Image 1 (cartoon, one colour):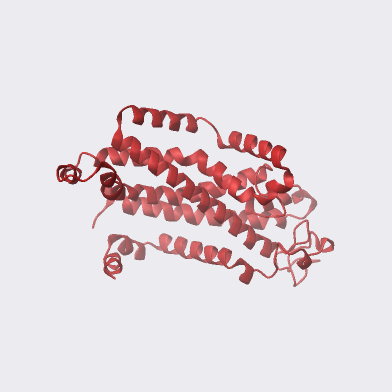
Image 2: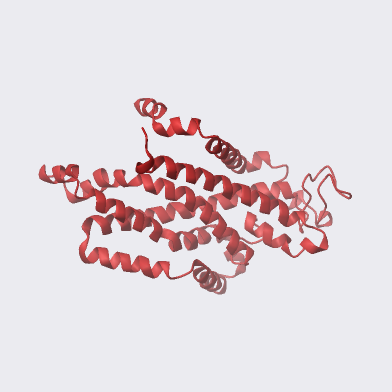
Length: 305
């Protein structure tokens, strides 16, 4: 209750209620997230149930176009699946991959940045060199080798079953240095402050100081980065799926839907790529707008509370 009262009187909420862009972005994002979570309830058809679609309905135009049907408001894809339902399920997959990858990035990056910044010395140099090496390896190269090796070792069918956790690992492992460097910079600024010195004087252990005192004071920039990183992770998944290195067509994401319909654009079935592409743009845009607002509000130099 006390935390809620502090939040109601905070500058964060005060700024949010006076920023129309933030309110709009948060509202749209909330609607999209709720729809994706409730996909089995909200979607007109179950994309994963083969009994709900027919290949004879493939490439049916949207309902308002000539040849369209009322059963498929946004038309169907190349497999005859209702495009609206497939987009809703695809958004859920993209969201799971994006959030999962960011959680993995944050977990690794925060630990590396905390140990590197607080302990310093040779450990700091070693961990930062690993981060530099990781930065120099494009995630596309990692994805190409990982997917190729996995398909060769376990088969395409097994890859389709484990595509989601595999993409989470690929994207998460390639982006953790951003968290590590940000947390390290914050820890370097915190470790010599008076409250840390006071904790050392009264005999509090090193690990307790790191995790109970220093770490909570470094999480503000992590929150801002996480918002942006979700958008980047979703874009990375879409790029990998478009290149054929991500989600299979049988388990659609927004990226795999765009790829599936891309070759049919000039044959007249433009909606298969267009509508998932628009949804992807809107989803990423509202996340980035919300992230920009958070960055401005949580930046101490701009704080006016």
